[in-house]
Length: 199
Image (cartoon, helix red, strand yellow):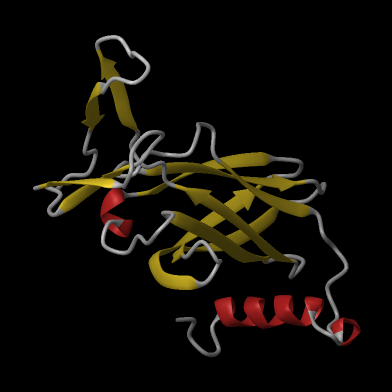
């Protein structure tokens, strides 16, 4: 939750006013010379691993700029509905004229492990205000955690009209034992879905 009267709340209110039905009522500073961008260098992180992101802040002005970024990571359902906040922090940044700074940012497995739902989607929201110009910075970055693959390998040659045995390999990448696991198998030629229980 955002504390009433805090800098985070002021930024949230001003941002909402800029995009509301009466956007012209809110007066912005007019000076917008700092940008912020969130990126992920590698492919989506594996479920059970830490997520590593980069926050790039650029000062395009000829003067020094200071900003404190407020970061918040939420677990969301595939519909975009918020489930839980799993991490909050602050990143103070001082930028020299025309400087670009990249901050490495990590979400630890321990931060999100007990909150994940369906598609394992997370969203990082950054807000902040430039001290010198009062410019408001807001950006979001959504990403999924990759679930492990199930490898299916045929045992022997496939012959039309004959049963085929397959080897199924699933590797648990989590730091805990999975209990009551169910594998559901369906495919051509199967009269019904086959379910295999494990653990």
